[in-house]
Amino acid sequence: MSMSSISSGGQHTVQFDRIHARAPPITLSPPRPYQKRPRLTKQQALQICERRRQVLTARYKELAAWAQAEFSLATPPFKQTIGRALKSESQLRCATADYLMRQRSRPSFQLVLDQCMIEFVVASESWGISLSGSMLIAQARKALHRFNVPPAS
Image (spheres, rainbow, N blue to C red):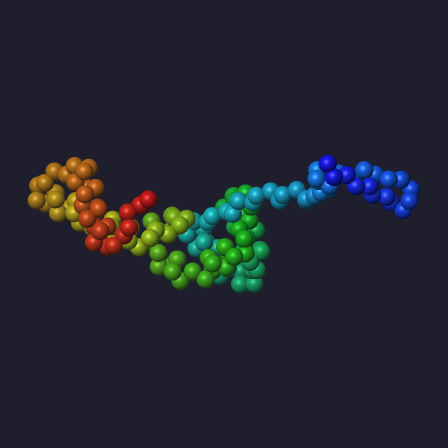
């Protein structure tokens, strides 16, 4: 083994093993607790926009505190969330009730697929064709292929 002597100012000598030497332990600050981001529904975002119209001088922090109290959120929404809601106000005002209930918007191909499937079911009923689950799945796959949507992995 490779042993070395280290002296500190001539007072005493300490035997030091170079091969098995370890660095002093690193002290890290404890990790911050994970703060889950509150997701707002589109309806809640629209209500934030309406609140901003009522109180024109309200800042993002004030709107976030109001939203936390109004919607019983565990934590107030971040400023970015409030900003996104205010920027999308014109889109939210034109939205349907179904869209406003969602937290995330659906991809556009899903809306088109829903419409195609509804038309297929209505046409099948008018022709007197009874549908099975496998027929609906096959029709949906054909529609997705037509829209060039890759299969889910």
